[in-house]
Image 1 (cartoon, rainbow, N blue to C red):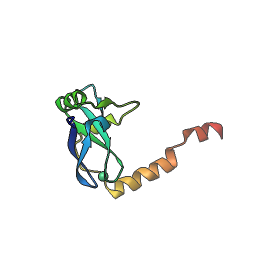
Image 2 (image 1 turned 60 degrees about the vertical axis):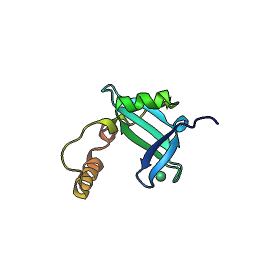
Image 3 (image 1 turned 90 degrees about the horizontal axis):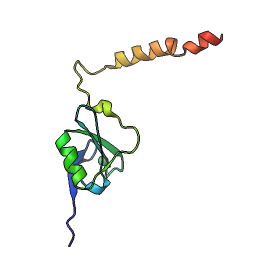
Image 4 (image 1 turned 45 degrees about the vertical axis):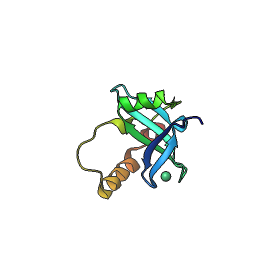
Length: 108
Ligand SMILES: [Zn+2]
């Protein structure tokens, strides 16, 4: 019987899941950290997880393939400060409503 290589990880919606490493894709940022992505076997949503370089290398060795195309590497960035609030979101919406289309002023 062939050995099945699988990754035990989690989906934010479903909790712990097991994914065959052949269904996992990996990508690395310049910092050495990176991301892996898989389709959750339960909810079928795409799940991106930040990961260290060692884990990404082990996933590659176990059969995970590289991500094709752009990846949301901003997920690997360290952030500080408090999360945005509803007020922050509404304020940004107001700013974009008034300032988002400078080309309109050029063509008027
Ligand atoms: Zn899920």
